[in-house]
Image 1: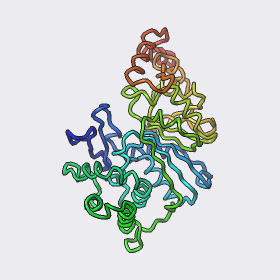
Image 2: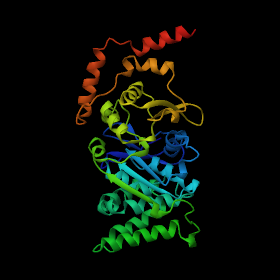
Image 3: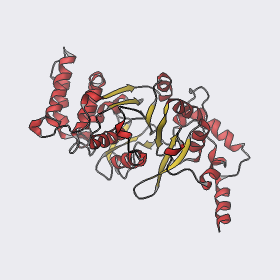
Image 4: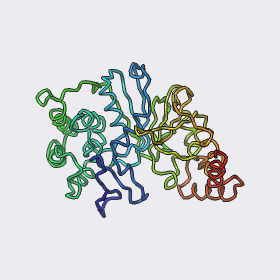
Length: 361
């Protein structure tokens, strides 16, 4: 995967192996998505492993918390599943994301959904329209950059230009209505034979919190049936992987809710356990470990942690990050973490793994 370099942006676009657009954050030095496929990663690691119960889509209301929304693949993958299931209830998504540029560009990128599920793009654009309008100058500068043309759905290039320069600049409400009408006509209207066959537009709602997720999460009080935790790698940005952050997630998850993340870290799993969760492993369609699941309900954990996993948690590898007041910098968290590890008398992970293998012989 070759990223395009742009001096004016802190992130670079790139196509992943499944044809969907991924991102690389130059400030953090980490990718937002797997190079093997941003869309497939969301479906394999965050949707398929949820193992939806038979009555899941009979619920009248589903609340979702999407932490580190980025350009929206996890929510898009969930919307695809809901459209397939013809869910007729109410779906509400709360987005925790620091970067408004990423969220507002999410309906318009080449994501692999637009051709078969254009409703997803329209649903997101409709619910993000106020943020899109507020951010339209920055958004247009990204879309209008010739280096990014191939990463934006062709339909939106000319539409965004019209939206930015023409329209009803003196009347934001009228301008937004015209913009959304054009998307609806292209994506969903009978003339284009793209009728919405599942989720009704009025049954979907979305709230955005553009801030450090540690600040935003303190404002939330509802219970969530699904929590996506898709933050940067713990070792690069540990702020959303601390015991205290998982304590907040435990407060917010419903009794039958499920938290999913791509991380297989022993430290992350240890923090989940100490926060009160039942914790298990996730497997992708090829039966490979692809992440971790947590819930208050042990019956929802299909693959509990085994003796090896629990043993690893009790080594230095299981020492987790701490952030007592949810206000430390990443550097401070890492420094405290390294000090604790360096002074720990716990067995090292390498010693444990060697011992475990010998005992199994």
